[in-house]
Image 1: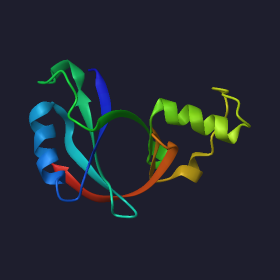
Image 2: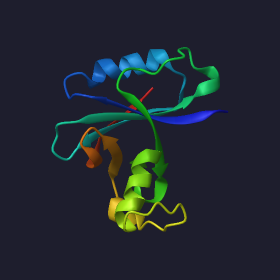
Image 3: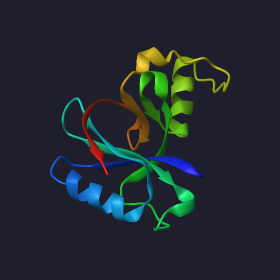
Length: 130
């Protein structure tokens, strides 16, 4: 199995429609879509595991990124954001052996965006069972 964790960004008004698009675009593992909401209630993120070997669509759904997850703290992150976090915590030096205290990043998504490193604190809004 070629498992990938995707995160699709949407709005409060559009997330149900986007969830339907996701379901028709991929084979979703574990039959669950997790709906995360930013604490400021401005952003909705849908996270889900995809079996890349059995997906029906080769390209990603719009506004979707590949993320990684630290299970113990429910932290989602991109590799680029992780590298930027390490540099921020380690005096500008990227050291891939640097130990991050993941408890400082519970229930959030770490991203690189146009304005640079960004942390979005989240909570679970819903779990859609497929």
